[in-house]
Image (cartoon, rainbow, N blue to C red; front, top):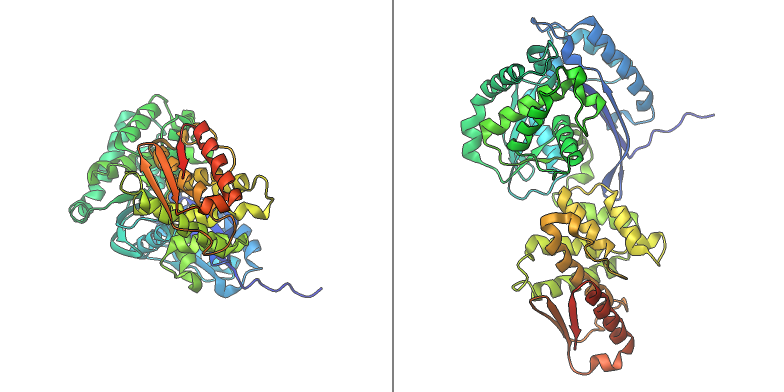
Amino acid sequence: MGQLQPQKNVYAVIDLGSNSFHMLIAKSIAGGLQTIGRVKRKVRLAAGLDENNVLSTEAMQRGWECLALFAERLQDIPKKNITIVATATLRLATNADVFKQKAEQILGHKINVISGELEAKTIYKGVAHTSACSGKQLVIDIGGASTEVVIGQGFDALHYKSLHMGCVTFLERYFKDQKLSNENFAAAIKAARDVVAEIVDEYKATGWQIASGASGTVQAIQEIMVAQNQDELLTLDKLLAIKEQSVQFDTIADLELAGLSEERRLVFVSGLAILIALFESLDIKQMGLARGALREGVLYSMVPELHNHDIRKRTVDGLMNRYHVDQKQACRVAQLAEQLAKSVMGQWQSIDDNAIALLRTVAKLHEIGLLIEYKLYHKHTAYIIENTDMPGFSQSEHKLITAVANEHRADLVKNSFAHLGCHQVLAECLTRVVRIAVILSMRRQDDVLPAIDLSVNENTLTLTFDGDWLKYHPLMASELQLESKLQAKVGWKLIVK
């Protein structure tokens, strides 16, 4: 049997972090990246650093054993498609070369120990390629031995700093006795505030529109909040409430919070203390979870065809290609939906430029479920969207697109948007518009419609056709009459003239 050929369009990134080692494997497909493998192992390398920054043999051994597992998966990937980066612990360790030499033998690849500044910029690139912030964005990544704090705009990091504090080093320093006391928390928060002090003036003066957390700590807090029926945005009050819940337990071993995973528990409180200090020092009002970080930043740097700055377009085009969407029909529905939405934009306060961009996204993707079957294709579309990564769209936008796609045709369900909270009204408006656009485009041809006008008066939509056009198109007329009845069932009024 001949040797297997490496797959040219498969890429791997290994990140030797201070808490965990990660391997991300992705395939470049349809103008986007598809994750085809993730391996993560808790190595807690930083825990092996002594006061002189000498890395213990035990910690190195844990790292080498993990890399032996990773090496097995790398043999099928072209060497030029593999990048291995190491961060804070191997920057700090005086005997890092000992670890590195053996690690490179095991992997058969060179390891790049990157500077804190490069790490911060690469983390920002990973977030920028997977988020949709149009203004300035504050990005925080709490690692095992360092914390990166970046303010960027678009794809450029404007201010970036790697701070000497992390969830593993702070665990060793301030929670060494494993006690969950107010005193331990206070000491850790004060120490973190002292470290952050050097960047406070510069960062506050620059300012930002959105704050995102790219670390396991932020994800763990979000999972706890969801388990406690709160929304996913982090605020200082919520962090302090979780700290209060934590000190009800005597030790870290006893710590049991709904939503907190076993593998995160050990370094959770030290990460929480650092995050509280960052919120207090930088006066952060709220923070969401970033979708990408260091590994994604390295990955996007490796794949030349992904250096396209319109992330949303790349995401939507990739989905349309992957599910063989009729591109002409998708654009036809999108243009018509946009035209209708713009005609009611002044009356419906919730419709702005971003809302129209989301409407176009739903319209372009509404038929991806046809690849499965016709009858319930809107349900299949919503399922596919819900379970697909959508770089360029925030978590709440992703949920809104899913919900509108789910209701874009057939029977409507009352209160189906209640779970969207403050975005409920917008979802209703977009759904009413996209449903009309889909019906009006049913002939799948250009230039078959007369001049049409959509107007709104409070909750009543009026769709007006030029002349006697509807009289000579009885199928369209009956479809719109049925739509009027379906909308009436959920309390929406549609008049067709």
